[in-house]
Length: 302
Image 1 (cartoon, rainbow, N blue to C red):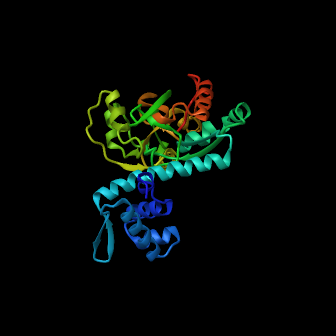
Image 2 (tube, rainbow, N blue to C red):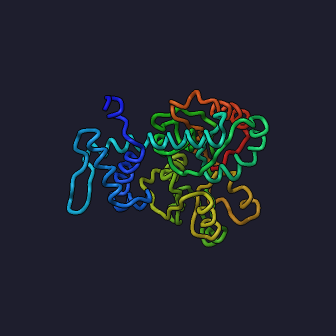
Image 3 (cartoon, rainbow, N blue to C red):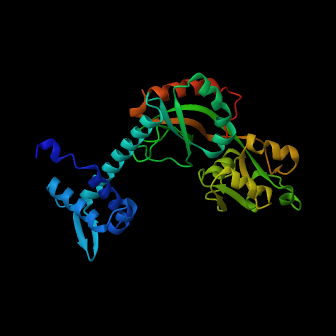
């Protein structure tokens, strides 16, 4: 066996290794790969023999990867994801004009999707595939070329384009304030405060901007703005919502301002992409188009 072939195992063996590392057992790996357990064991044994180093340890009836083999499996996982992503692009758009984009849920529903007709008209050669993600992820392990992200430009291994800032307002259902008079921002501490999972420090930042040193603030946690808005509408407490998301409910009287007015958030919306994708043709077209869509008075929802 030549040196190059020794270090280039079969895809089936690498898939078995990745599945064992991720799922923790050969039985689970066999089930996911639609193989027998003995077939998976043979692939793993063949891989170990081909590379010539110990990769597995028996713990009772379980087969466990060595720490070094687990590190190798992580690299393999990223490589398999990239192969899958490249194959998807090739089959969906043979010209190579595909872009896999992770978006924030409300951003996709309220801002991006209604504008995509314009992008499609101007760039018919680019196939845009959308999936929602609420939190940063590892681009080497997830099949995305770019993502819409709220926060700072601090995603490791990436470059970013700042889209715009955001302003929030403290809101609640009218009945929450029926028997209370709030004179200061600090008075909100006596009310149940609703938190959003993706911005755990939002209330601390809001209070700090109003001169209140609160320390850690407890309260119920919601995964995205659609759910926290419903909680506020049903009188469960006070929520910090982007002003454009609260605008209609405030105008209709379903929500009221609990205290103060629009307050700038510390974070901003960004388009983020891995450094190695910087010169991707489809991404460059999308970035250029997006710049033309994000005027200062645009309201980018999450």
